[in-house]
Image 1: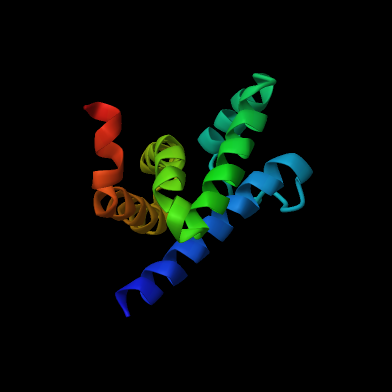
Image 2: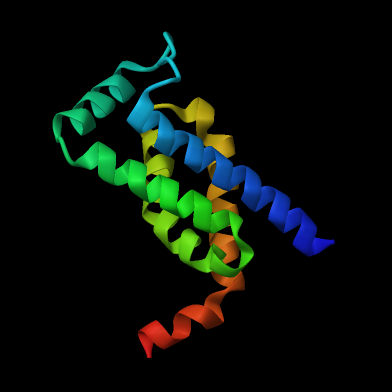
Length: 125
């Protein structure tokens, strides 16, 4: 039962990151009208640096796909960790209304990393 629940949660999180990555390339989701000004400035700054937005999009796509596949989930979790830290800090500073969902997603990512900690040990030995 634990594996099924974990798979569903990881599937949902993976799909959210795949959607976010694809949206950075194809811009099919409109920007909300009530987005805080600070978030608008951060988005504009990221777009000003020409290579940053595509890099984040590729990391979100790759991490999201890998996060769905149980065998590759530890790699996906590590790829998504710096992105999740950025999302967490952004919401903590600029848009606290989205913080509860971000905290749940961050906790899931940390749980996957902790649950697969033995796979990371060869890298630090």
